[in-house]
Image (cartoon, rainbow, N blue to C red; front, side):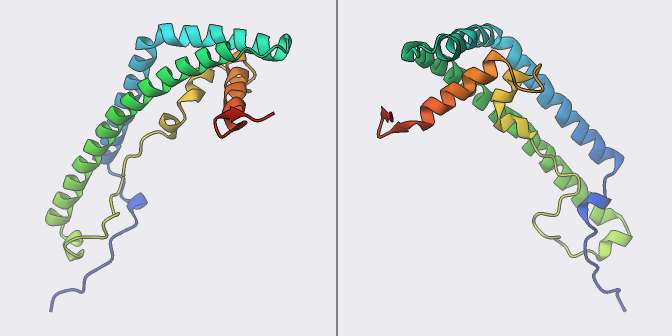
Length: 177
């Protein structure tokens, strides 16, 4: 009489050397992508940091808001965020390919391992031990501008706050005053 089917083990209990290798490779690849992006956008990042000082000086030190300076800063932030979006989609493709490799790996393990042969043919759709996720900072790329500022007290962090406040103070396309 065949043994009854068993439930798949919890994914976090099945981290093999191969899974660790795949995960480490993805982390390394996406970090290299981030470094390459920052290298490519070095001039833009330098302009952003310099303009951050001008925005903070105008808005906080002189208390003389200059919408043109903030618009220029916002334009450059838009360029930065667009570059990150493009790179993030490429990084997500690396993650998706790794998860596909892991799915194939676990299919082969289930087919060949005697104890796992009692698993149902297809475990639940979300069962993928070692699933790779894209680092959450890819969804908040502005923090990369503050990489050297643990307490976020730089001109860049303040200028970002001014820009975001300006964007949230708008009502029907006009500044609410």
